[in-house]
Image 1: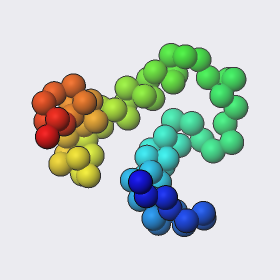
Image 2: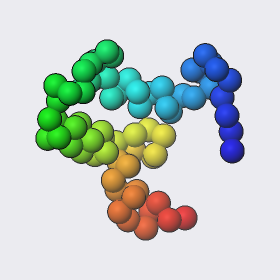
Image 3: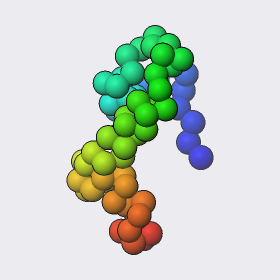
Length: 71
């Protein structure tokens, strides 16, 4: 298990990229009480169906639901 140092975001590249994608739907400081479950599901589906360079331009859903991710 790898733990990044506190306040060292460059050590967590994929995590920081995902946070940036997440912020496209929910700006920093957002009150989640103002969002519906449908809003959250829409963002989740959008992010999980977006191709990622890190995944060989497959989507997270493609790798999760096929044998490609089972190697």
